Amino acid sequence: MKTIVQQLAVILVLAFMGQQLTAQISNTEKKALKAFYKNTYGPTWNNSWNLKEDVSSWHGITVKEGHVVSIKLHNNGLKGSIPHELGALEHLEELDLAFNQLQGQLPQSILELPNLKVLKLEMNGLSGNLPTDFSKCKELKVLSLFNNSLEGTIPSQIGDASALKVLNLSSNYLKGQLPKSLERLQYLERLEVFGNELSGSINWELGKLKNLKELVLSYNDFQGDLPNSTADLEHLELVQLQGNQFNSVGVFRLTRSYALGIFDSDDELLNLQLKKKGEFIKTRMADSKFEGEHD
Image (cartoon, rainbow, N blue to C red; front, side, top):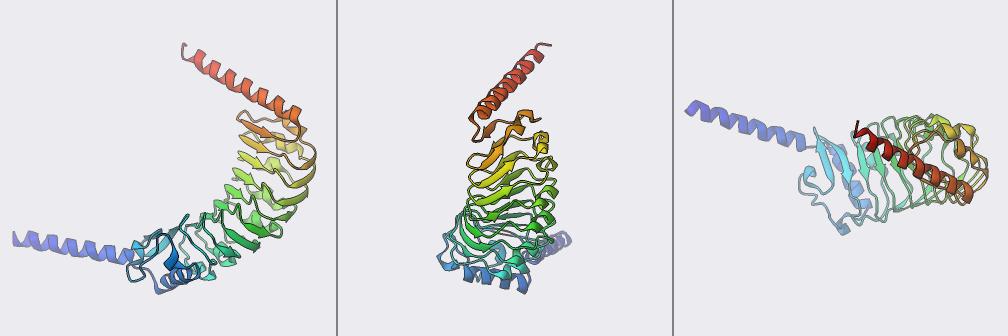
């Protein structure tokens, strides 16, 4: 009996030690979090951190195998700026600081995090130019920066973020053309640049974005014709093109998409035609399903 009790005690001690080792992070990572806390006025957050407690207990922090893998502080009253020290969190997979009051530039060091998959900074007051080097963003799937005050052009290197599924840069002050490198984003499902100051023609093949479901280019100053390959985007569900200077968006009369549910452009006749086409397809699909139930 005594032996069994001793064995159980050892097991419990080892389990406890394992938890402690898992919870502990390096001084480098803890220093980075403290710099972030200081730069963003941590004591005034809606849910602040007790710096004397273990990092794994801090609000919005997820620690896995001794490393910080997630920071989720959505709508938490953050102010100030994002410090470059966060670039020391090499195992970080998700950074969600959306719906706060952050200002200043997005540090290049954030886009050098090799394991980062999700970066959500929408609804803040970030300003300045976007970082230019995306070569280390091989895992990045979501880049959401809408509704900030970002300026300058969309860097041509953004095509290096080859795993991107969501790119949302809407409601900023971005200028210039959409870079040709975007056509390299083969997994992209959502491309949204609504409400910027983008201009010029789209002189690259939109049709290469084979997985695109949402295309939102509205309220910019785009010109010319959409590439013919746009009609090949068979997974499109939502398209918004209004508020531009396109010569024609008639290529959508040839669309191969059977999922297109929302289409808005400055061509009211085309809007009506595609709406009727969508309603017909939905009705026909519903009829086919109904008929099939009686086979």
